[in-house]
Image (spheres, rainbow, N blue to C red):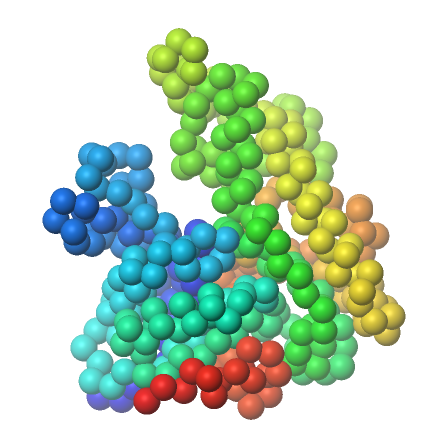
Length: 339
């Protein structure tokens, strides 16, 4: 049986796996359920995510990635191995794998990602940077000397980059993204309403009623949690105004980062960006009203890509056929061509 090509968008919140010729095969949370007594992995992905906050003390739900990079090598290796096993089955030949990393990733962090993939059974490992993959997945032709700006907001990092002629011209990466938005909502609800909610509830609030551009307070959602003073379970309404106030500082951090990248972008490319607009990708791109808020603050039209969650994964898959053309990420291929 022949080898296969596997693309991995290894995200802080979700891991998406593509297989050559078949498209996206896995899109599951980046979570591993681990039994500390038996010292073994019980589940990974969606099955492990269901266990968060619902297990005995000796079973922990571990998130092996933090801020876009591997924070727990052993758990990351276990997760990647299981996902590769799911998509490759009983392949006789080891797969080629492309893994996506944030634009600001260090060599040490890159090495951790590569080693995890090799230990999981990869024949060769290639690295591609998220902004390049995001634009490819959004259907943008980056092969011409024409400037495009992409803002890829994942679970752990927000990558802001200007791309032209298959390469990254300017880029910045900040650790402000989906998970930080969730944490901010949890803190806000705790301080204002003395209500303790879980991360799943916070994420649901963000997805359901968030509006960071023009919240009215009329869009509401009932949430349940524990009252911090009474210690009893209660439910109350949270509004889109609450969510907007909770994440306001984080949204401005992202916008400030966009402005700082624009400030150092060559003048010729600024004109291209003004014409082409700013492309929003990643799960964070779906934060209600974010595109309008960016447009208002930067005076550059901003739009959310089709299927923003899957843009990077689609770009990773497309990159297998472009390894001779891409300038960023792929120039390091020789470092990771292990036999």
